[in-house]
Image (tube, rainbow, N blue to C red; front, side):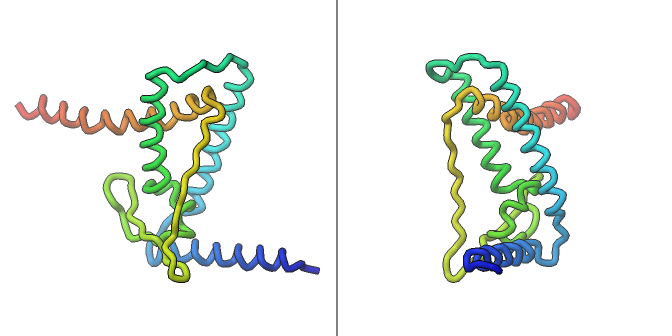
Length: 163
């Protein structure tokens, strides 16, 4: 026999799935594949965190300047990844509607109104484990650096080949 709590959870789950289903509209968006990719990355990141923890090295007293720079670059990259990347669109799908591409490897989405309120997203981070955080921040910082180097490399190639 279902309890009132069970019924409320089912209703909320159905509403969540309906909002997710409206995400793509008439566009073909591979949300299941993106979810699988994020799950694989989560397993990968968890494995790295476990490996770092097993090493048992002591934590530093305060962050080094390099760590602050690394964290700022990683935060930039993670915010773009969470808010614009196609691969994380399954996370945004219940709250947004796909409009179309926006720039290289980014999407334009609009918030879905829900009973008169606009969707609000909040990202909460906690730096309780600085060593593990530095390791985790290194992962998105590397592609962010590569993203920044691509236009510089393209400009250099254009400049040297246009002579």
